[in-house]
Image 1 (cartoon, rainbow, N blue to C red):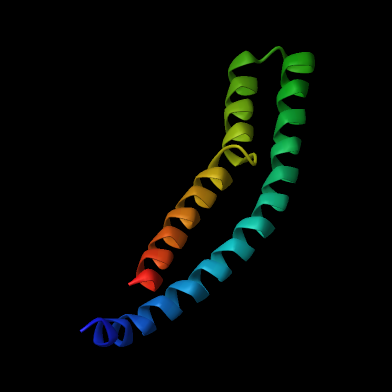
Image 2 (cartoon, rainbow, N blue to C red):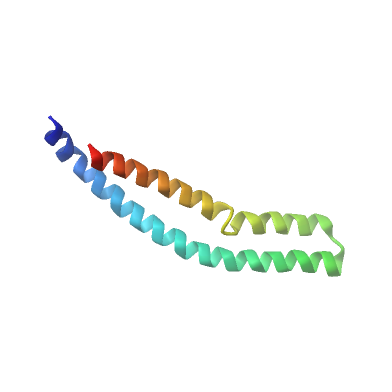
Length: 94
């Protein structure tokens, strides 16, 4: 019975492995680009405070800068990829 289950789950395991590899690549590539954009938004926020005295605009830019920084959305994406990888290991261990 276990062999039949492994044969049935093999295509799912293979597709999940390929999806994890693609997502890891996209996550690492996008983290670099979003890190650069995050730095630009932070500089924009500092310029808003220094030159325009616009605290609301600066706070908005800092919040968006944090969200796209490596500690915001990319960290959540890595967490999701780790959960997919856990699922892949569970399927492989059957």
